[in-house]
Image 1 (tube, helix red, strand yellow):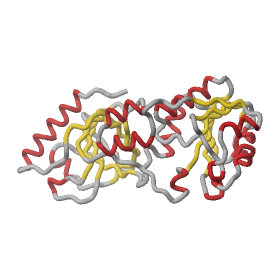
Image 2 (cartoon, one colour; image 1 turned 90 degrees about the vertical axis):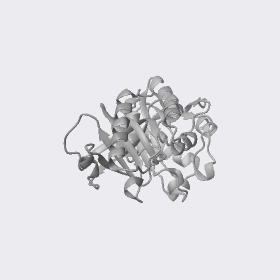
Image 3 (cartoon, helix red, strand yellow; image 1 turned 135 degrees about the vertical axis):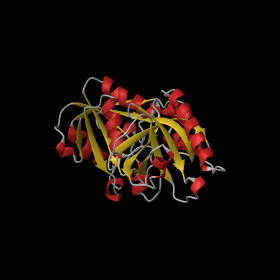
Image 4 (cartoon, helix red, strand yellow; image 1 turned 45 degrees about the horizontal axis):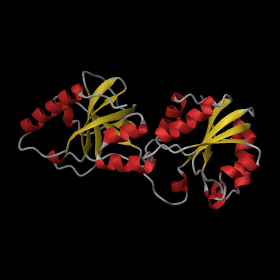
Length: 288
């Protein structure tokens, strides 16, 4: 898949273009992308970074990093992605200017977007704007009950199984392994301490069954209250694995929330509970 940052980096050729932010690439986003892939022209996505809300001064917790978003789009069959830098200048473009400078410039003939999509200065542009410019516009009906906002709330509540249903994949946290307290190794359960991008949403504190790649993982999200911690950490114990993960990027899937984090009366009780968490992780089923 080709990833471009400016329209001129993509060959101008007949394209079916799905347009949107696509944070999390959830079921609704996938329907839009699938319609572009099925249109028969070169399947292309136009997306934005940073998230438009960030650029306009409104904080939003993201479901996926840009890197992960691109990976998920490629899995959907997209051939090319144009990542438009969303700045105040971008937001001030008249809809017709945006369509000319971005969509027409890369050869868009078919444009696919979700129901109610709006764009351009003060959100003045809609799909009729694109139709008036001679583009073949295909509006995809929203998937009932599916939105990034809804998925974010489910994640904050720790309901990763329902979030997975809306995403059509497990909820994830994504980051780079950094050094930690190395306490897990002394307990017999060495963990990877994952530093998550500050813009990324991290689900409710607790212990989760999940996976890293093809390896199951018991995952702790929280402050480690047994040892009086105050700093939030995401720690993954990869089952039946040994090796050095420092500096590596991990995409950690969260399959099921097992329990709250808590302090224990003794370290032996903590170790016994971790062993039970590991066994539950072995038995867990990956949500679709």
